[in-house]
Length: 210
Image 1 (cartoon, rainbow, N blue to C red):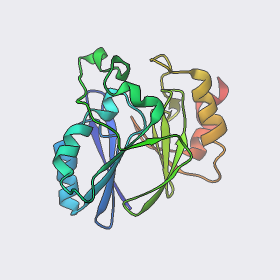
Image 2: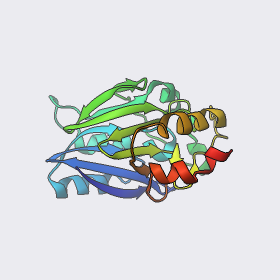
Image 3: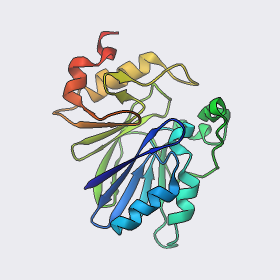
């Protein structure tokens, strides 16, 4: 499993392209669809899925275009995954695009998640962990020894909770009682900023002391 990272959207969102033996999935297609497609082509990989950690504009802004560029197989359509509690954000002010004058081209997720699912995408087993707080439908994706944490957990920080349907109590619970209680260590691949580890955040993240 090889992981490539791009910075997309005005917010420098971390978009991850995960390639596994010629098959691929993308986490948080915030923009730069042509660049994502170029990486897929360079790797000789077929995109099978787009996994969204939540539906703020800077994490979903490139989905529609990326689907146009890659979804050319009627028998094996690219599946887009999103938690059902964030569905209302895609085509409304709730995706926060208005704050920077960004518009999200509409798309329809193929699979609406609830949390707790184990997906098989591009030959990789991916566990879905519901982690509300930054948004009601925020999720983290666990794949091998990696956690794609979206805007839930960052290096010595955590996601803002002052947007529509955000909640500090919920994000603290998601981090302290869900992520931090996972057994073992994981590499944390967040939606913004640099990577970290779960052990480091258990010891240093300020949410623990809030």
